[in-house]
Amino acid sequence: MIISVLDYLEEAAGRFPDKTAFADTEESFSFRRLAECAKATGSRLAAAIPEKKPVAVCMKKGANNIAAFLGAVSAGCFYVPIDVQMPPERISLILEVLKPEAVICDEPGAESIRNAGGDYRILLYADAVATPPDEELLRKRRENIKSTDLLYVLFTSGSTGTPKGVTIPHAAMIDMTEWMCEKYALSETNSFCNQAPFYFDASVPDIYLPLKLGASCYIPPKSYYTFPKKILQFISEKAIDTLIWVPSALCNVVRARAFETCVPESVKLVIFCGEVMPCRFLNEWRRRIPEALYVNMYGPTEACYACTYYDVVKDFADDGVLPLGKACENSTALILDGDRLCAPGETGELCILGECLSYGYYNSPERTGEAFVQNPLNPQYREMMYRTGDLAYVAENGEMMFVGRKDSQIKRLGHRIELGEIEHAILADEGISNACCVYDSEKSDIIAIYSGSLSEEELKGKLGEKLPAYMLPTRFVRMMGLPMNINGKIDRALLKKEYGGGQNG
Amino acid sequence: MDELMEILRDLKPETDIRPDTALVDDGILDSLDIIELVDRIAVVFQVEIDPDEIDPDNFATAEKICELIASKKK
Image 1 (spheres, rainbow over the protein chains, first blue to last red):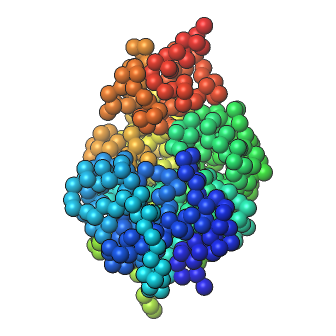
Image 2: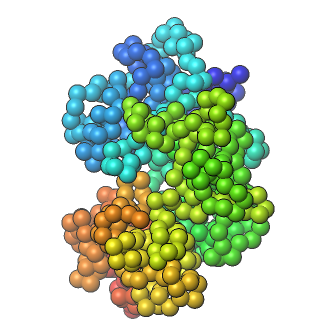
């Protein structure tokens, strides 16, 4: 039985010692070297700090980050990736919540941590990996690791401005990894191309699937995604077959018309999660690489990567909507109106139960209590349920459909309107690159903020053909580019403040 | 050059961009910015940038982007 992700590492290092595990453009780790570096780092940590404590990792993105993560785990601790480029104030907020026992850094990371202030134990990665392994100490630490122990904490932006640390135990990660590998028949022959940053939940399959399988994962520089031509060439050269990306990265390939320069035919599986995937971009991928299987996954960070999936096996119109599909194995998805189960077709809040769930927010019992609650349909025994804040319904064919965020649902002139639906209609047009709608409840105005080549008049005309009058935005604001928040998503709070008269709904 | 600098400042109001600022190496432009920039160049300069030309060399600095636009205008 697999207790911790160290079991994956040990097995892969035994079966494929010399095979590439993780490689960026500067450094490559075989499974053996990865295991050695994890042990060295783990020995250094274990000698200095107690087990089951948080270890932050603040390093420039690269293959060595994974050695640092697994080093923390080898010491019986859990890791917390911190973006080295994050503003010092935010790093400081995170560290205050986390109170890490140690921070593993490279030189730029150490500078970021020092700039954030506070007195934290900084351990340079270069020193840590040079530590002779203390096998006896590591064995003791490992014996005490339980599958219910935390594996990592990922910080996401909270609506109040204080970051929330989502806790994920080994068991949840192992469960997700085993299911994905089995469901998509993955093996050591597959290869992965990491896109998401490691402080973002969308990256965790890129670490643990290769580790379980003994497969290789490449970590190209961020600039390759800025210039999608480069990433397609890279995928093609390395004959990579599995992409687990966020939708916006897939969309950018299409927007930059990069397929006109290169079509990586090696790709066989494309999984996307983290945002809504607009069908018109997906359709272009399917036209260019028709042999690949495309999978729409859904899951907040609180549900260890994903909790629902939909294999795209039929055609969708460019303005179509992909289903969320069904719950992943060992997860349950319920659609509730308050504490009542919704009937088929009825929209309610999507709530998640099962192995995938986080234990809540680190050092934040109040916020944990708000989102993680007892399953109201089960009065018999304790069963945690996470309220996602997302709205969905079950369609006639049994597939779940995403509607939007609970807090972006508005009531205007007696109509219940989902702002996401208007955004969807705007985004379906080729001339639009990004869009966000906000509501000014005082004036009953819907304001559509967008970027793209369409003029305000043109967009207004096109929407008039698609949406009922009560859903039509009253004002249009064309921007050069929409502001993004720290998670790389549209900064809705900022736009709301600027155009929506402050309060929501 | 002035028109291009205006577009860049509009795109990244929080950054002090000069003609020789390293737009790519310093991570100033991200993937969405590049797409916006290409769209905007098409409108303002009436030149269509080919997908093959969207690469780090051509977008390294404002000067390089200017050269690209000039070469397309010929």
